[in-house]
View 1: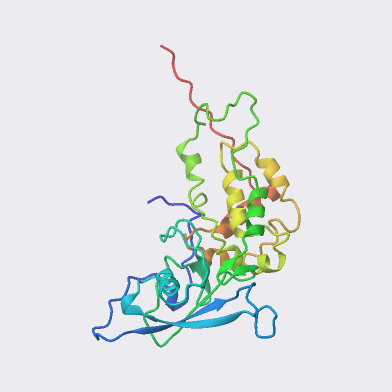
View 2: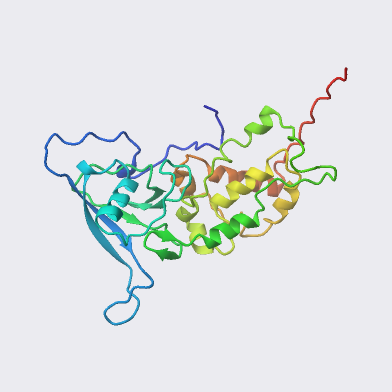
Length: 289
């Protein structure tokens, strides 16, 4: 297992019900273990009794833990398949890779597919969409702005050498240069960190947010990229990066245990000239026969 300073350095502080622990064995009793699951519901196309759009509300379902998988996503799938097919949410990989099922579970942003259900049946499981984002329907947030911000950082390698032919050959990179990307490239763009950040809540139109800034630093620090200065120049304003107040909610919320706050700090150091991007190491010339 590699070690990187961008992999979360702070021990995550999570609500007890969200601690990722092995699934508790079912009780020996043969009777059902009913868990109350309270889910945020809103359908913009559904009309109320007065003919106006129905207001958002919370709907509670009963789920038998003895007949349900251990994860919150298992409960949602069971509800949709067996109780209420109108329940809408995103999901795909079911193993913490795609980031589709990001939502707010019992007060914390996380991925439903890797968040275990609290086996205490006296406590309801509360599920809401990611906070401070427009909602498309039920647990589905509108990610349009988030992806527009991601596109704005131009998340691909950019080169200035005229003789460079894309796909012609691999670009040289030492092991140490490659290690600088550890803890950065693993980001799955689930938006758990950005939607846990108060600065992003109130300034999402100008502040890029933790997820996008971590992604931006991934390309800035890449030894193969030749546009670090231009990338940084786009952030030389009061909002793009400096609106981060080091609250560290992003680092606590990241389901991949990355450290967006540290990446943002490194961007600030580069912007202020406190640190500089190292020059790339040139490949050693190979001796000709």
